[in-house]
Image 1 (cartoon, rainbow, N blue to C red):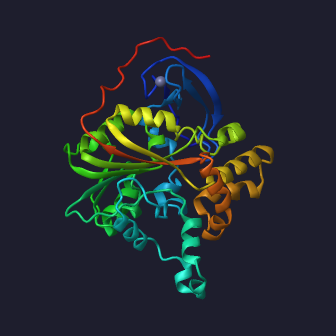
Image 2 (image 1 turned 90 degrees about the vertical axis):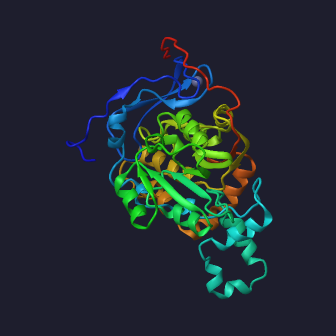
Length: 369
Ligand SMILES: [Zn+2]
């Protein structure tokens, strides 16, 4: 988006997307740190459920204008979401665990003399397992899986390799058309506009997507509706309840207004999932420090506007090489062990019906401080 032809982003006040309260206080005001969408944007904290969200938000008509045409995830998946989760996860049989390893990208040690070093395979998987996504295999005939925000379809391809009949939902037409050309049915639009029949899917996925949604409650309800009884929901989001936002302040890589509209922590996620009818919830702290690298870049750019190092650091989360990932792994693993991971992977089961009706809209006057 260049200056001059920059579209105007129209904003509107909203109620809390989780509890529908209109009582909130200002948490932070910042500008778009990554793509320079004009204007200042406000992030607030709900006074009732403590959820942190952007408010006011772009109107539905303006959402697309917040994304530059070269927006990274629409062009393809990055290294941080390309690795499998080989560790045992709930309700995943042992046989599936070993199958999962077979679907991983061929690692470097298989094509070199490194493979002769004892334990190198185990060490490689331990260091490279960022826990950024979750790829279960299935032996069930015609098991159907859907991915929200499938972009160009690289995770759909992995699902197909793992035995699933994979479908996608993608807002950006150019990205969706790549997946469609590769043979995957992809609805262009929102999850709700796809109008899939109820009780259709055995599994649903959404990698780093939920934080972009204006109404995550509605999305979880829709996942609940289209999943079969006992169906699996797996997704990832940034973690606002870790040390990073407190340390980096306005320079935290994840604020990313006006594209990130929600900022979740384990507490708000559990509330949202439970109220939408999901249980057996497992929250995994990812082993990656991509947010930290990006935040250092934004902080440096605030100090030295034309710093090339700042630009390289900001771009790093999209292009981190495997060698850098292995080098930074000990720090990432330590932070995850301390439950301070900057990103979370969540796995839950859809056990119908919803535990209780969703929180009703509380009509209260807006209260900003
Ligand atoms: Zn709230």
